Length: 180
Image 1 (cartoon, rainbow, N blue to C red):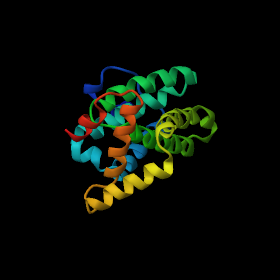
Image 2: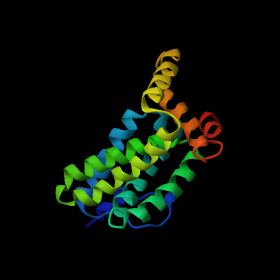
Image 3: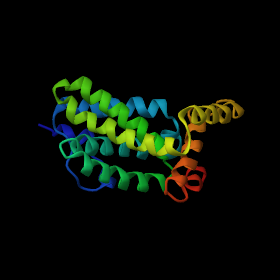
Image 4: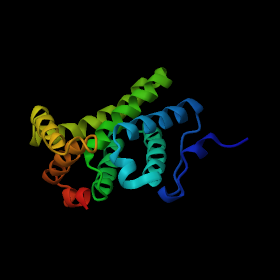
């Protein structure tokens, strides 16, 4: 019988454990599909490689929920630095953590407290961003930018505003990594 975690395995992401519970696995896959469809930048920029990292990172994040929130925060800070330097602003991680937590909670409600840790990690990024710009101003700038592009790429305004916020939050070259 094939290991169900193989659906999440990505040889480029290193060798780390992945969930084997089929409910968890399916929730991770569903979260990734929804998030990628809502954020076409991922597929446009990274193609199938981005989707593969979405699956493997999602599996890794799901397993992190068994650890204390302080450890999860450390891991999220590290991952945010890596991803931001590769053109993926923290705002996308906020959105993904929320989506992943929602899917995991729906699939395995008795582990809601564990999966809520992912939402809490997303809230840390949100709070950092909102310390520099209110959500209302973020949304207005993002919408304004996106409307000037004719809505050519969904969420492009949010990506750009988020990259600027990431730089203010100490993640250097977030804008140039996004726009490269």
